[in-house]
Length: 85
Image (cartoon, rainbow, N blue to C red):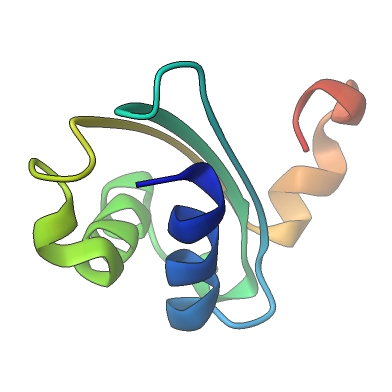
């Protein structure tokens, strides 16, 4: 599994999202996702959406996945955007 494949999978389930996926070892990943589809959902609901998209790949091909999810409105409030996406 690669960061690029994970990004493509998430993009397929969250069209229009801004996504960055990183990994140093190819099994532990960090995903940063900004999506309008997260609006009116709490963080747990947002994370569940991503987990549903990735399905059984989590725990198999993806040993660990750290998520940071934001709505576009929340993203605009971040002062140090350069370090996020």
